[in-house]
Structures are given as C-alpha cells and as structure tokens.
Image 1: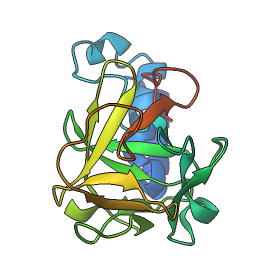
Image 2: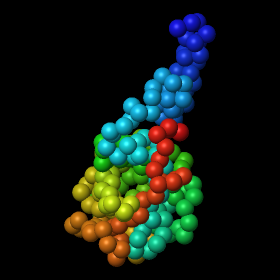
Image 3: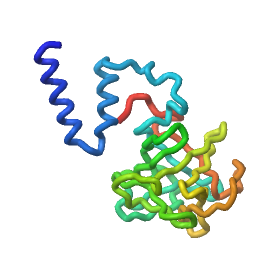
Length: 194
C-alpha cells in the first residue's frame, strides 16, 4: 500500500474514532464503498435486512397509529399516537443477535423499559439488558416485540407503549401487541449502512 493510501486510511479511522454516534456503522459502509469488502459477505446472515443501522417504523394494528419517541427522544416519552411516520417515528436497529435488538430514537436515545408492566421511554444514552427487545416476525411484516423482562409491548388505551401484555399474542389485527414493521426507504434496509 503506498503512503498516500496509508495516510487516507489513518485519517478515516481517526474521523470514525471522533464520531462516536456512527463509529461502527460508517466503517462498514466505507469498507464496502471502497471495495475492501464485498456486499456478498452478508449473504446467508439470518435477518440480513435487519443489520445495524436499518431504519424501522412500527404501526399498531389495533389503533392504526405509529410508535413515536416524542421530540425525537429528548422528552423521554414514547407514545403510539401518530397518523403518519417521519423522523420521530423512525428507529435505528442495533443488532444484539438474529432476533434481539436495541432501538435507537431519532436523537440517539435508546428505547428502554425498567420492568414488566412499565412504560417504554427513550432516555438511555447507552444500551443494557433493559434496552433489549426481541422482534418476532410473521410472514407479512407483522411483529410482536418482547422486552427482556419477558412481557410483550402493547399500545395502551392512553396511547402509551407499555411492556404489560400477558401471554403470547397472536398475529391478528385485534391485538394491541401486534405492530406492522416497515423499513424506511422500502421493504428492506440496504446492506450499506448509514
């Protein structure tokens, strides 16, 4: 590798180091764009369209409203009361395993739930077990979201998102614990991260 390429590589890594909100995500994107990695490297990964950085939106099928981190996450309140999805209703996935995720709000806070039965908030700056959710999918983009406490999330009658559904909900329209998950920009997220 010539000295110009080494300097460029060093500057890129320094930039990534000083941009903490996008550290790992931008590195993967850069490696694919520059040809150091091939996109086919991701073939065969379970839920390959749900990698780090994928943007998703959740619409409650019972209320026909979108999950929203109020003020983009700054207020800490998570509601299920929006008619249309835009920035505050879009969450970035942080993949823990093929089915477990942490959800990051528009302004960078993670969705969190203190315990079973509690309301979901967007207040955490760094993820832990209480910020971890299992996304269980059906074949038609319907999902149920299970908190690490073991309870499923559901839209309450007061338009709050709470981890208080007892038992395993079916994927029917009548359940407040079933959501339609869509990807921002199409059905599937691009393999190139942002």
